[in-house]
Image 1 (cartoon, rainbow, N blue to C red):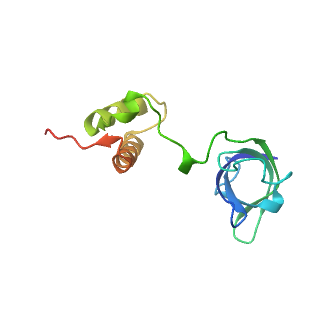
Image 2: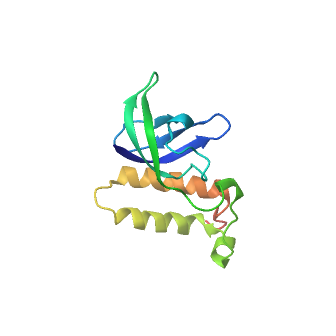
Length: 137
């Protein structure tokens, strides 16, 4: 049995995808393949165990057993934390410096990966508003 985490699940259409280290791509699953059904709570973020097979378009899961579900409301209904640090955006320069410092402490990660991850996280932060452009140059 393979293990993974539900990356996404569309309740209206009744299918989703599992991210698993045992599969090179995300693994498709249908609600009919979930042992016990999908009505016990949110599927996104759930840790699952499943039988890995091959479907028409790629990896497919069957006999999906939910080990634990993510608690709390779905992401779109979550409120931001009320702490003062969550309310105040961080400058881009400071954010990039801290991210670079953290990434450089990871064994086996090269400078190309550091730059790629740092740039991605910086763009993400700018898009979401928790990182702001530096006003001074």
